[in-house]
Length: 140
Image 1 (cartoon, rainbow, N blue to C red):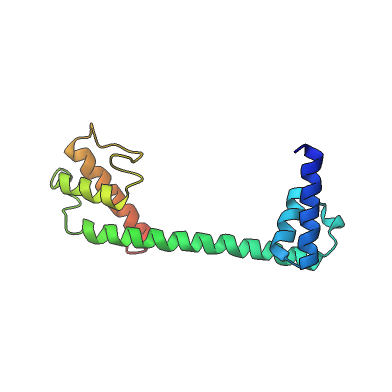
Image 2: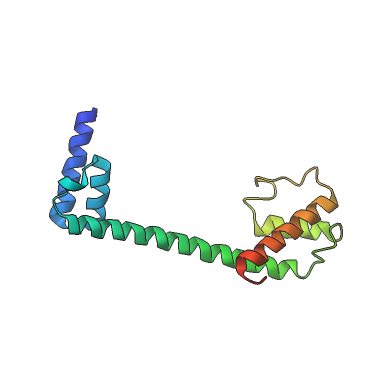
């Protein structure tokens, strides 16, 4: 498919969305095609589409925030059973809590390895994340 054919396909989809009065698709296709605001055939439909897109983005962020809140609250509950401010004490348990609470960040497949870290380093990381979680969850 060459560029002209691609542009024609986009324009067809844009006009289709206008005909169906699909506000979200119409606004998206107008943006994709690069239609100037002065050339939009149905400004109220376009504005409705932009509002729907903004609402979807907001709902996604709220959903992410709720998931983060739950993860932090669970971490705080588990962390409070350990001596947070005694860095070297219970470092194996602290490491396990970090790895299970934040698997994408810590552990075997995480971004941050504890391989060469001392017990005090693990404890300091644990304490910092605990304080961050308290702050983010509003329990501070």
